[in-house]
Image (cartoon, rainbow over all chains, first blue to last red; front, side):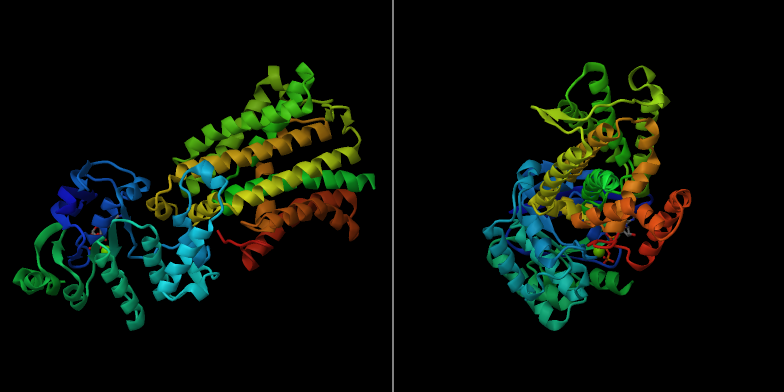
Length: 243
Length: 288
Ligand SMILES: Nc1ncnc2c1ncn2[C@@H]1O[C@H](COP(=O)(O)OP(=O)(O)OP(=O)(O)O)[C@@H](O)[C@H]1O
Ligand SMILES: [Mg+2]
């Protein structure tokens, strides 16, 4: 039951084959991890899946619909959302507005005459409380710590109420309490029947969380399978040690 | 007193220009240097229609709004293909184009001679010919524009504008076709500038292309920068400051012609000092 699939996907930057004939199938309502050494094309894959980069070859099948060219603003229509490895919040906006902005009206003319509703506000409150940042709601997002900003990214993705969540290293650089908050959120997504694609370097977390693992190397698929099988494979260990 | 009314009217006109440009520059983060073009389009439409066809000021004003809206849509569409510094250069280019059309389309605009004798507004027996009555009209229009702008920036639409300013690629991923948002605010701001232009034409009663050059766009931008990005009250303050500054210079003892010459230099100096010590402007909420 693949909800998301790539077929011989290609993405090149000048001479660099960031994604090189990649075919994967992401199972529905499960946590799928994508691992691989630095520069192996993981973030590029998410950028392509979220329409931020055009595809150079192959195709993407989302929920049975074959896509070869699409715009990033259309991506939520397919029930897909993402976070950014480098944390891309709206820095000179309040924490509250960072969440509200993804909840409100998309149509230009309706948006002109809409203010956030009580419902939007309550949803924002709920999300910010979940990440323990409700008290910070009126601060500018850019003034918060790295970990706090990382949590807001997660909350913003949750606000999208998507079916598929692409999370690009959501745990990186987090202290233990914050890490636990994010781990719980990821687990909760799965229990709610959502599909999670997780990019992660921490092997313990991968073992703990993932149902399935894809290993990328130089844009290609190196191995895939259940976490315990994959992480013990010699070529996977070598790819990581070879860095 | 008469002179104070004169300055107050100029203040109102430039406050409209500052507020509207702030919607584009301060809220949406599009560094536009072409506002004087729309200012000019509004002014010329009222002038030409009034002089050639005896059309009522208010009809001319509405037509100016429509024409500025259409032209800004086209310009905005072309500009949307440009990013960063190229966007700025593109806006400068459009200001030059509009200016040179005003200058060279002589059958319609009378070119460098300009259009004199533009009449003051009249409506249903109300006559805005006296400066005081004109000021009254101008303030009402400014008030309406301020309230409308305030409602825009506090709406869901306004929040998206700020997100575009902060990270357009990111807000895209959350389902916003940002091109529509940028075009809409660009058109709204252009329409407001055209309103300022129609007020200007009928107040001064003479217009020529020289008023609507790139320098004028820079001046309007200075109002926004000085008052502060993404703060409408700031733009009021910025306009107040820059309109009354020459008077202040005279007040502290400079003679009239020296004050006039000093003006530009002081504007420049102010901007540099401000960018060094308070880059978001006096009341601003956002740094470039
Ligand atoms: N926008 C871009 N322009 C040019 N090259 C790029 C671009 N994005 C990625 N690359 C290149 O593509 C390759 C894959 O990069 P990518 O960011 O996808 O790796 P990654 O697996 O996410 O690495 P990391 O674990 O360090 O995050 C790298 O060689 C990178 O330099
Ligand atoms: Mg990456």
